[in-house]
Image (tube, rainbow, N blue to C red):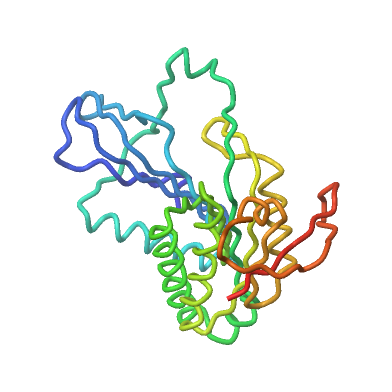
Length: 264
């Protein structure tokens, strides 16, 4: 498979027309996706394509090379059915001088981490074909709940999802809704939520808050939704019930955190 297989500019595009581009790259068992609005200039061999803004990106870790190949082939096949064509050259981002000198932006969000419990065992039991179908339904259910609660998907990690919310209550409601939805697929998940600041630099989200959220999720058992004290404090007036889960040392995090279990 080539380093990049570019699918995205509609065949009817002409010079100056703005449309979307979609790219996929596979490295071993990991698939990298990138998509967004593009501007097309010129025609034929002289045509140039530019991102009009920073494209959205997603990383999918498929555990095995074969699953990654199948994932990429299926994704490409879906886009081809929409009359997309391969692009001959790279897509570059034209930056304005002001954008180059811009400082990283600080933001505050509630971070949600979802992880399937014993996914490797289930995959081995079901086999690749059936597991791929189950995972398709799983991600569809997760994204449906994210959309209904206005969550923003940041990245998927094989069988996990990281998303952000502006309001902590929305993140908790999304977590419990996902939990109920995936039970119909025979899956159990663990969920962790944390609220904190992060930086946006070059289109990438970075910050300790993401690491804390991951560690909170790791402390949850099957079927549990755990939140950090930062989330609990922001929801002091909420009707959602919480049970004290004790003080925990989170791996790689310098301070200890009190965690709370969301009560149904």
